[in-house]
Image (cartoon, rainbow, N blue to C red):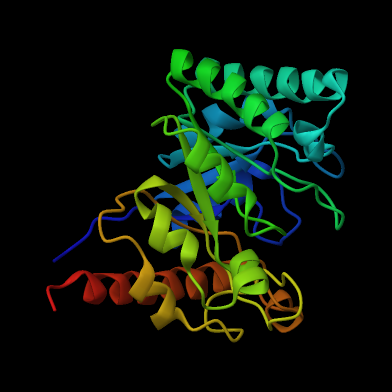
Amino acid sequence: MTIPYPLGIFSWFGYVLPFPERLSLIKEAGFEATSIWWEDEDIPWPMKKESMPELVKERGLILENLHVPYNDSSEMWSEDKSLRSGFIQRHIRWLQDCADYEIPMMVMHLTEGHTTPEPNDFGAESMFELVRVAENLGVTISIENTRRNDNVPYLLSKIPSGSLGFCFDSSHYFLTDKLDFHLLKNFGRRLVTTHLSDNDGLEDRHWLPEEGIIDWAQVAGHFPTDYRGCLTLEAYPTAEEQEGPPQLFLKKALQRLKTLHSLLERESLPK
């Protein structure tokens, strides 16, 4: 069965180039989709974030989502109501940005740093407020798995809304869960986007698939067969790849993504 996943790569792929040039290279390499980091770009080529969505569309790329900053994201779980309120208001502004710029999805983190709070009712209430806003705006919130393996399942279990799903980050998942795949097995129908990259089992390297030790056949074997969103890389070049031109890296990236696409198609066939 042919599954028409649009193939994408994050708009920052490890080469310091002007934002419009990176988009053109992504398109020329053969990718169909991209996503953006929702902050202004500074030196050496300043670019206001508000200018980015139109530039993506002008290149003929699908703008899959925006990824919002995760500074102070652990505040959503805080007992301090004022801290939680600040967190909620920031994310409501970003949800409104999604609606204003016709971006269908906001990707966000649930914690920041190495010390991460356990899931609790305060965090669930914070997310309830955001989901209500997202529902009204027609935007999907995608919560990304990071250092904890329990907070994404916790919120998905508490909040069954179609406006709340999750982003599967393969590198983060391998560092926290190895090959357990409980998130994909138990909540696969809530998968709305991916951050695909490889690592060495030690750090979040953001390598291309097959550059590290993740077993991609295992990933494909647990990937939800009814997923129809983008397959998106969040990958950067190794030191050796960085010595070559970005065009070569992007060509390699697309081929690795096509290989994974073929793996997923084979796994979707009736056994």
